Amino acid sequence: MYNILIDGASKSGKFDIARNLFNDLTVKGLQPNVWTYNTMISGFCREGLVSEAKEFFLKMEERGCQPDSVTYNVLLQGILKYVHHDMVEMLFLEMEGKGFSLDASTVSMLLDHIKARSLDASLLKLIGKLVPKEEVDASCFTV
Image (cartoon, rainbow, N blue to C red; front, side, top):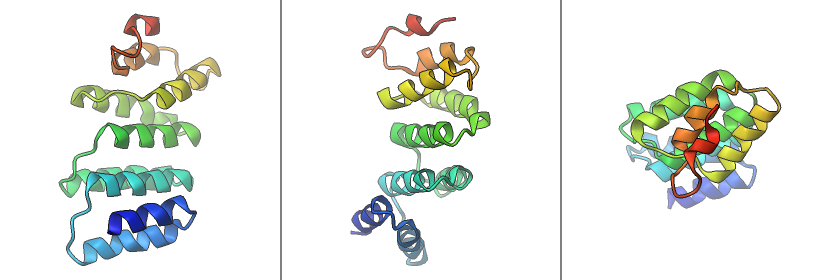
């Protein structure tokens, strides 16, 4: 039930309510799941609070909830949207190490940033490694 309330509050622009609901979960000793964390990380990013989203991501792991591919893609999209490029390569390497892939909207955002020269083109090889093989041939991303 908390998941639905947190998701609804976060998506309806009432992120403070979502944050309070999340805090209420932990106060009551309940363990949020990956979906709840993803909702909160997405909310932080939507509000432009990328540093807080990254901190929340780290707390998620500390509390024993492992991020999934959605977690990484949501965080990467927030980082790109709010130009925190210093975090991109680190997240790429972590994703690769855990076997996660980029989704289509994240790849599109990354390529737009590389075309605009706000990201180093040397990241193309790493992007190619994180694109699912069935979606695109990774050789398209070699430099």
